[in-house]
Image (spheres, rainbow, N blue to C red):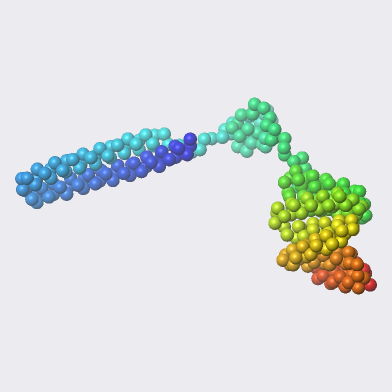
Length: 297
């Protein structure tokens, strides 16, 4: 409705301009015709020019009048501003000391009146903040480093749920990957595979190639642990190709380490461990480099 009024306003202004233009053309036409009559006094030409000029002037004047009517109707009802909202504080605000209604609180009706009933969407806000979700993820990492597997898995689960409620798919995928790692550590291959697949799906939806490759490495570890070495090797090849495109040195190191773990030839395994150690060193991860180096001896 507001857009229709704006359109009518624009038409009215065009009518004003058109009417003024027609008035100007009518006046100029009459001046030119009667200037010609003064210059040429032939009787027949004068009578013909007079009729023509009168008709032309009448049409122009009628057109100008019509446009002025349209302009008057359009401009008399034009909207100067958008409808006002939240003009007065509600009863709760008055009771609490007259808080301004210009910035209503979350869940409050924007028209300045209290809703007839609570909307279901008002209770869908996450009950956890971003800081608390990140804290849960940090607790998971700390517990994992300290060897407290149960605490780590519990914290990863809390972080996953929190990030899902917040709509942060990137961090939710990180937490799912962590849950996959914990399930893999206790050799629960079914749960680990499910977590890694969920993480890969989220990473792929976000076009996060490195995260997707990390999930592929986790899936390869699941396949290797369950005895499917050929499938594990194929998954590692796919992950390695992604890491190369993403120029991820750490990812390539992870692949080399995983390949060494499933290698059946001891000499090849040692070579892969050395490759992993060099890549970890380039990636600035001396602890991992030392670990890979120790396995190459």
